[in-house]
Image (cartoon, rainbow, N blue to C red; front, side, top):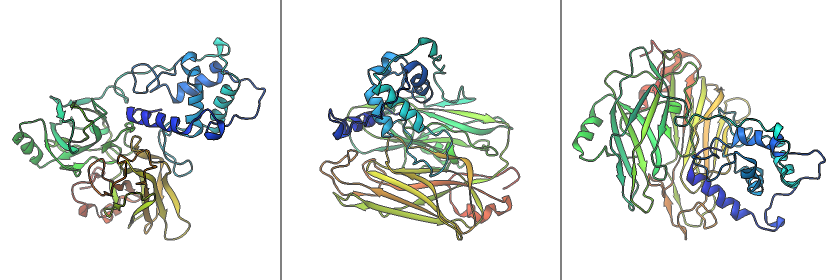
Length: 449
């Protein structure tokens, strides 16, 4: 169960909305009587220790701890409800529609164990069966970074008004012979950070704009200056954990280039401050494969108030054989469903990703456990559904208002980044890399200009 204070609040609100004293009103149905005893110490604690307590422990973002029997017992009914409805652990992709690094799912047997434990009266069991709780390293999730850059001063976010896009410029020096393998963004105030984008600027223009603005950083937009970092390095969103680039991929750094942190900041109703930091993890292994981010986006969004099933769509065709490394879907508050489907020129279509219960607070970069092969001519189709009705508990407007495409949190978007590698390096330029401009991440293998 991973971090996002807003996400946990939303999940708890959904639980309250769905539960009532009457089983017919949504209370999980108790399983059939089973004589096999289930105890906290033997069966339940290992599940919680493995899947939940990274966040559900003192000092972390979850609103309560699940480290002890007493902690779990008093919340047992809620635990059973949120896991049976797959609200927790917070993993949004539908099983069977892609296999991903870091999936957070409970097996059917684990869900059944928790249901039986609740039905049997939540027994503690023999304390000799209790495994040692996991040990955590506080601070950086990927361990101590090789390099840390931090905003030297906090940026003040006003209480009211429009969302702000702000760019912060850093001189980043990567030692010769080293390459970036991972990056971890750490907001100081998760309440105000809608998302963060990491870019590199080799022109010097961002630094000049920063120097001309007396406040920290300079104003920006949803499209940040410079070139977006590639793949899993590019973006931080609520609920997302850092993931290193896959084997064979690392990001070279041009000497003298500036690192630009683009923050989308959302007012909360009271004055706030944000002072972000970013940790970089290095490797001495140069990139052996090239990779590029492809963009699917639908700009034609105009959703009438009350519309429950507004559909958006975009597609692209890959001109060469490629391997899909990962995908990053993005919508805003009233997004409800998101699909990526591959349609090869021959054979049956297959799913790359399906999210059937979109939640803005749990946006994840989906890196495939193994690259997915697409043959030349395959169409990749993005389809999404938005719910602008009053029944959508995530709708920020009550009563609903017309919602159009835009960069504000209360506007709407529908897009996906698709990270692909050429199956044959000599075909790389045929992906149209030279035509993609400066906003999408590109890695070229060593020796390829």
